[in-house]
Length: 258
Ligand SMILES: Nc1ncnc2c1ncn2[C@@H]1O[C@H](COP(=O)(O)OP(=O)(O)OP(=O)(O)O)[C@@H](O)[C@H]1O
Image (cartoon, rainbow, N blue to C red; front, side):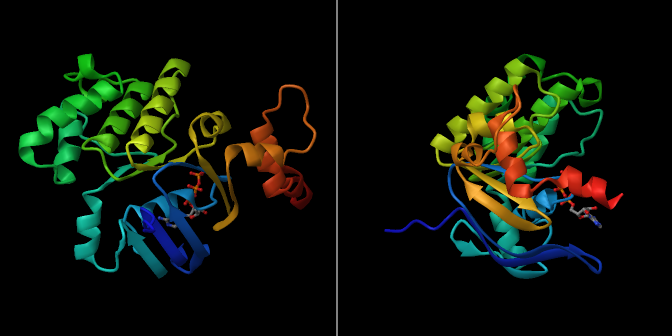
């Protein structure tokens, strides 16, 4: 039996006002860790917002968990199975970390009897079990990000969308984070991770996508991307070089245009 992907986009176009951001994009997301790389403004957040059912496709189709998402009822049902950490997520400053994560569980319609235990589990997964009563407004950048990750993973969503989740994490926390997403993927979650940090892609991702100007320029394993690299200067990361090979030398092009 062929299992349908967790998410599938067909001929997606997306944009804001008169401006087109994503053009005719086809994509399927499997239960593994997928890394999304791309320059600023490539459309990564726009793609996440589409997968999270926040912005309906301008044209094209979104399928989640084997069924179409073409109306609000279907979107609402799908949202229960989606964890989404936006780049800049909102919160009530006076909430404790525990209140914040419980509230996000409630928004995802986790059964009320399970909210407490699942919140404790999510906080333990990001190393915040002992800090549960601290106020959101008092957190450092890294702790805030970990609280956001806990809110995204609470209740074990089937699709986990993480927009630059490791910004502000220290090296030890980044290692823990990678282990967390790998274990979620082993348990069947499709994790999609947008990042500018290729080390996260090399260490944690099964598949890497490079998005540029609203189009997927590359899909393969991190190792295949590294193998595209042209000769390197000492200390260069082959993945960064592979990424630059896919995109072409955009800095020089930008320089020419000035
Ligand atoms: N709400 C909006 N209204 C109008 N334009 C928008 C809106 N959100 C994003 N854009 C534009 O759409 C383009 C893609 O933005 P998006 O945030 O999806 O890119 P990104 O790849 O996530 O970038 P970054 O790496 O900088 O986070 C950008 O040119 C941005 O200015």
